[in-house]
Amino acid sequence: MTDRIPCRTPTGTSATNIPKWKFDACRDALLAQLAGGEIKAADIAERAGARLSEAHLTDLGKLGWHMTTVRLELEVRGEIERIPGTKPVTLRLP
Image (cartoon, rainbow, N blue to C red; front, side, top):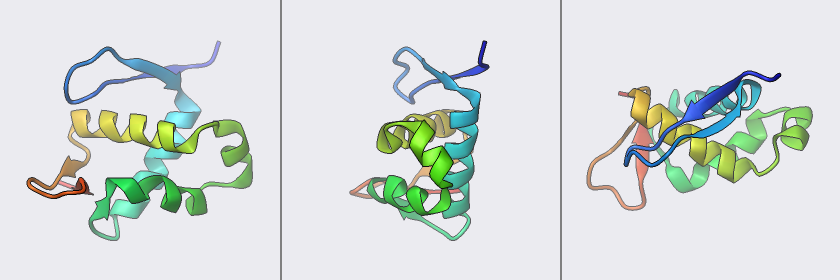
């Protein structure tokens, strides 16, 4: 059985469980982007594609969905934060 990570949302809707390897790959790609500064949420998946290996991209499935799911869990954990008052949503490290 594959280890799974429950991914929550800041609004408290029910968690979605994704395989740990997918969570880790998306988390690493997202945090690497934010190490360079702020990023718009809409740009995350496109930029993550350049950071993930072909094997990960092939096995991951819907990259945008997974990146959004992991982003929301990282917001709940406090590992990343939204910049208040920005539209579109812009993220940064706390």
